[in-house]
Amino acid sequence: MEVLGVAIATILLFVLYGGMVGVVFGFFGMGSFLVTPALIVMGYDSRVVVGSGLAFVFGTAVIGTLRHRDFGQVDYRLGVVLIAGTVFGIEIGKRAVLLLEAVGVASLVVASTYVVLLSAIGAFVVLEARGTPMGRRVPVPSWLNRPRERLWSLWPRMDLREGETVSALVVFGVAVIAGVLSGFLGVGGGFLRMPALTYLFGMSLPVAVGTNIFAVMFSGAFGSFTWAQVGGVDLSVVVPLLVGSAMGARIGSALTRLVDDDEMKLHFGSLLIAAAVAVAARQTGELLGIGPLRTVSLAVLVAAATVVSGLVVYSGVTALRARPSDRAARAD
Amino acid sequence: MFGIATLSPPFHGAAVVGIVLAEALVLYVGYGGLTRIAGPELEDAIRDR
Image (cartoon, rainbow over all chains, first blue to last red; front, side, top):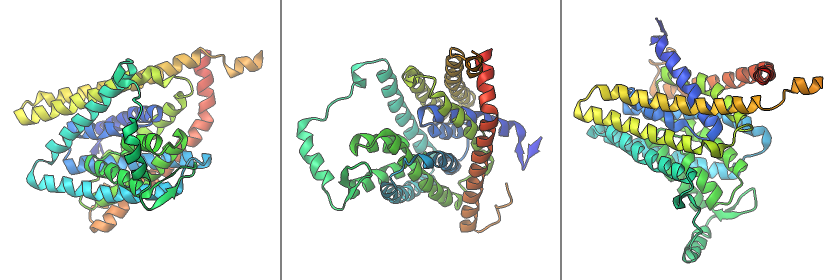
């Protein structure tokens, strides 16, 4: 049975997967990176993988921005510079994918970049969660202070909402790099912008999150527009994913009040590594002509997302049950 | 899907952005209302079990 030419089973799979991605996104603040590997292992064309990933990021960012707007957690001036840089970077990333596609290696390069990036971030999160020395924050060496100050004083300078004065050129440069990754991999680029906003520019976490998601909304819209023009956005993928993720994100963000995210870091890191393994298995299967590896990679990815989102929900429900009911409190 | 495949590239791109934006707004309003109505009841039900 089909709806608008798409099998209902496929639509339900995307809604369910979107729900799990939403729970992870709402709880950990990032998770759109799980969409691209899923589309890769499902065998979608590289331009559809990247374009649909960006359209999903756009829809998620619209909902996120609407939720942040009332709290005044957006530095609009910084946001505009981030948007300009990211849009510029997305165009570079898109051209790189199209160039690689013409040579016939786009899928391999996009998937390989994903494997390296997810493995590296996943390993870092797992090591940090286990408390190894790698996870400890290393102080900036004193010999780096002078070049850092010179970089910060580059013209033109701009005042941030929270009082810091930074170089607009450096902000633009960071945004361009995030944009290239965004246009190349079909992700929001928050995993790069967020550390830059908090560690490099000294912003508080709530304003960094609000500003980042505001920028992602515009860059996501531009990315969707530009990729859709070359047939890169498959709405039969994006629409059901958003239906699931919008609800999942509400559940995930509500659970942050109940569950300590430090307890969940190890699971989050494992999820990143599982996603890398899934993409690597899929690519190995393609290169060596081993068909069953495609099924294995999809199973690994769906199982990992199910386990981690399930653990988050289970921990939240357990924590909620441990609290007295408002109704019971009122009765007392 | 959605009958926009025949549009010229710029209009196709704009239509895709419009559809995703409209869906996001509908989901934000719809799920927001659902959460306000059913959220407290669900929370109490989980706590009371």
